[in-house]
Image 1 (cartoon, rainbow, N blue to C red):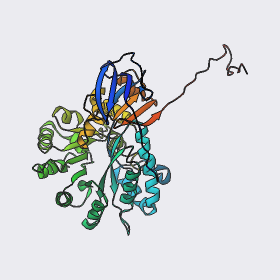
Image 2 (cartoon, helix red, strand yellow):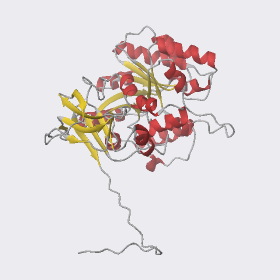
Image 3 (cartoon, rainbow, N blue to C red):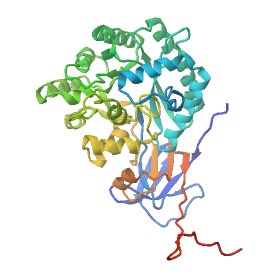
Image 4 (cartoon, one colour):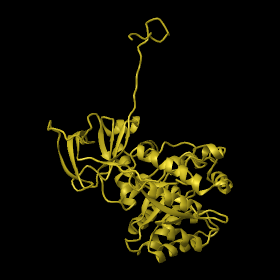
Length: 420
């Protein structure tokens, strides 16, 4: 398959920034070379006129499951908690092939791109059975096919029953990070040590599902932080979910967060899936299934947020849109719109180890132009009209058309057509 490529754009004209400024933005070699007040200067034919659009740092998705995405119509699992979702997925895995995983992952990645996301980190399950690397092979192929459009990082999500030999094979195939969920195993400490040992030995980072329960006694995150505190910065460590952190009393919360910050661990909040799965067993005073976002942010911890699952047994909803994630951070975690968008863009890029992007000279030109007057409007309305640039190249354009016909007074009939 021939890889798609974007069109280089020399300049963006009449772009509105979140602070209200109207600017022209020059691009060169994939980075921002100048940001100046908008003028009526003559356009190059390749320039983009962004009149009516808000220009933002492109979102990055720090925690996806492209191998699971868009399976809900196949599986149709009943609403349930995390354990029910795990069972539904495990029951379905014998039906998975490299081809059907790749086809869905390809569609899911392009949905992210169309909504503005130019980089995604996806967990991919090492599967039980005779061919545990089906998902890895599929996502490595999708990463190659879409390499000119979107950056894809891969994490080997390693079940307790899958041996180290399979994990090493996944790394050999091109997986970027070691992953797993030690808190859900019979031996959380032993499993955590095992996964970290492989990551350290292979010289790659780790990205672990961590404490995905509303249980304040579940503190694998603290053990993780204490274990990797002296790791070199070249081996980044990320912890996703961390739901139990949101259940801690202030003294314990401060202690764990201090350990996380000292270890430079990036935390990824995942509101939509955790709000869907957590708390179903508590019909009264149901707690919010979300990590301690405000406390982490105020403490200076590196914080990102992602969509996690999209239309699969773990979450039957989801639009593959960072604006959805950011909106949930405002409503469920009480962040400001600016803080929330930072978590799905600049914060996510930082946790993912990507170069800084945005409308600043020298920053990578990974940008989203969305038809909105300001960030609050963009987040509340999530307009579909979007223009996406990756490394200074136009990689996606979405436009909508809306028409509201005037009704005839006193009649419910649609107005008759006139003209030839």
